[in-house]
Image (cartoon, rainbow, N blue to C red):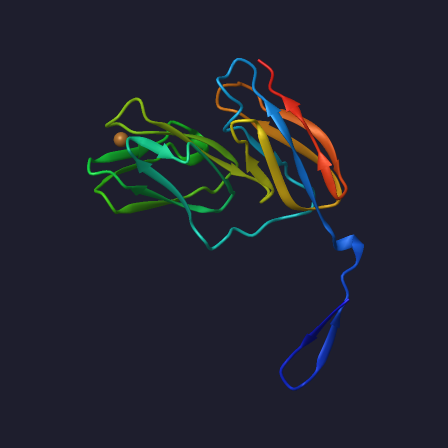
Length: 196
Ligand SMILES: [Cu+2]
């Protein structure tokens, strides 16, 4: 129970019930054959009857020192991503993937950016026509409950309401995503191994 003073001298009592307690999904993703377990995207799949409004805040994908930063950027479907060029050289951003309309955003100089809104569920590969070795990913997801693994494969998805979900794992080097049922109650551990 928490007391909140509001204008006019009223005191409003806010009760927080345990039913509203948000849980957490955490664990370790193992990616066999990779140099480490980084850059897997762990996410809660679409939940029947639940929609999530697109955030007004933009996400950011940088091109810096000739690499996409971050290498993998998960966002909620509907999010606008600002593609930024932080280098003194021209870059380009395009994607061969139909789920993002095979966009080619063109080129722009250092310090400028170009927005693109991801309208559907999408695993978008990002490439640069100027630098063929450059590769990055935007993963547009059906829920805001996602995380990217660190080098140890560790991830944590916070504020997931208790309940039964399908948790999926995407990794650029593995053809198919993992899909596993996970029942969340408070802090729930879910470890997965990618399969060739
Ligand atoms: Cu480039």
